Length: 443
Image (cartoon, rainbow, N blue to C red):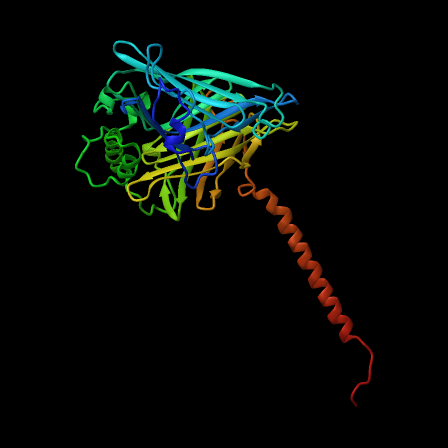
């Protein structure tokens, strides 16, 4: 991780800005990562503040005319050349460069009443570690607006629930977003603008309590940035976190919920399941009555995001590169926020669960255990999932898991019976032969 001094030293003198960027690591294998960033001008006033959890999924064509998915993440060491506060030409810019020719930046513009960012993301398919068999070689750039709608000036944009933007073959997923550009006097505003999903499912948090003593993270951040803007933000986050449900031992079997994702007006992903999360030896049931489903449907990958108050679970489905088209569960990301342990992350992109033929659904009525990481797993009950080619909002023919398919037990039982019968026959024959052996008899 580069220090504040070394990062700022590379920026142009006329546009000097102080930049703080933290990549927060947890028990995560891939995808989910947290970013905490602050850009300052030469007078040490903050012009851009952002905090979010993000993942980037890329679909690319291989040399064999197939399609694969890869996930690109920020490494520990990045450069910030091009980051700056506003000037006569443009507004605040956060620019991040990393890896072999990859870059991500967001630049902000404003009108008299609103501001909005434009994300420009460049990935380089010459990076053989991420794109080992890419058909098209070289840098590819996509751009899109974020937030999706302009935000009122002097307000903080907040989006705690999952929010994604798609541009070409790139999907960028955001959640737990707190963002503001053009900060008045360098401090976060007390007013907020929420994304569409938060406007429906997120309760209004109480007013920030500046006397709160629950500010360990505030102290750590303030000692680095020497600003008070983080204090306003962290207090809001702490109060919002207290609204989350308390974590307690749930009932043994969770209720089964039905979830769907729509592409425009048509259902493109359908799922029913009961979910129980085991995070760091703490059991938590996913409650269908309070869980919201969101996600994305594509030709080669689909994402189902389940958000239940303090728990977010992302399921990523992909197509297998075989002659027979089949789908499977490729990745799972889990985020848990609670007042006791803070925010915990876990994820894996190397899974091969829930496989079935494309055009069918996958079903498993009995309990299955889906291991994400050594400290995180999901108990799944009454599962039925179809992430591709849903017709008329209904499940297609189900391919059952082996646990449900009792027909395979019949030959096993018959075989075991035959083996037992043969063993009994052999033992009886041996005993009979032993008793019939000739020899001396007692007179």
